[in-house]
Amino acid sequence: SQTIHQWPATLVQPVGSPLSLECTVEGTSNPNLYWYRQAAGRGLQLLFYSVGIGQISSEVPQNLSASRPQDRQFILSSKKLLLSDSGFYLCAWTQPGRGGYGYTFGSGTRLTVV
Amino acid sequence: DQQVKQNSPSLSVQEGRISILNCDYTNSMFDYFLWYKKYPAEGPTFLISISSIKDKNEDGRFTVFLNKSAKHLSLHIVPSQPGDSAVYFCAASPLLSSSNTGKLIFGQGTTLQVKP
Image (tube, rainbow over all chains, first blue to last red; front, side, top):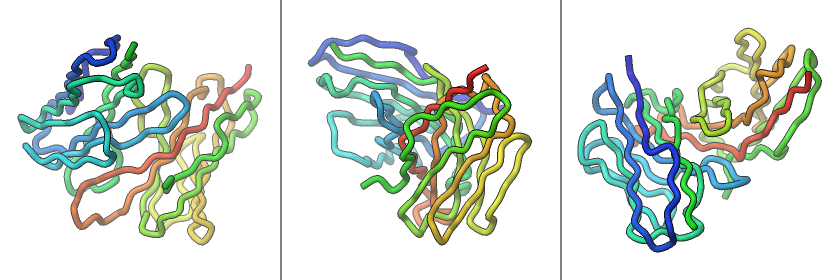
C-alpha cells in the first residue's frame, strides 16, 4: 500500500534561518507531488507541484523553493525564513492521469518563525 | 483570485441535526469536486467527491449536491455527530488536464462544530 511521510511534525525557526522540509512517498512510482500551506485563518494554498524528477512548478511567488531530487522525494526549502512563512505545510501525492481524483496528504509540519 | 470560495468560516449544529456546508466556484472549467475533512495538526482526508455529470452523490451520512448553473456545491451531513467536528475543505479540479498536473484548488475551509 502507498504511504506518505512528512517531517518534522513541528519546527520553530528564527527569522533569517534556512528551512528544509522533506516528504517521501512509498509504494508507488512517478507520483505527482504537491506542497500546500495553510496559513492562520486561511485555506490551503498550493505552493509547488511536480510531475517528475527535477520538474517543479511554482504557483505563487514567495520566499520558498522546492526540489525533487528523486522520484518519490519532495523537498521544500528556504534560504532565509520570514515571519510570514509561518504556517502548516502539507505534502500530498496523487497518481498521474488521475487528474483531480483526490490527493493523499501527509500529516503536515507546523512551522513557527520567531 | 479565489476560484473556490467557502464563505462561512464556521458552523455550529446540534448533534443529530443536519449540517450543510456550502462552496462556490468561479471557473467553469472545473469538472470534478471534492470535500476533505481536516482535524487539527493532521493532514486533510478525502471525504466525498462528485463529477460534473452528476448533481448528487451520497455516501452514508454524507451527500454532496452540485448545481452547475449556479456554480455551487454543498455537503450535507445527516445526522451530525460530535466526531464530525473538524474543518471541511471544498476542492475543485478540471477532470481532464492537458498538462496532467492534477492540481486541486481549495476553498478557505469551514470549521464545523457539532454540539452534543
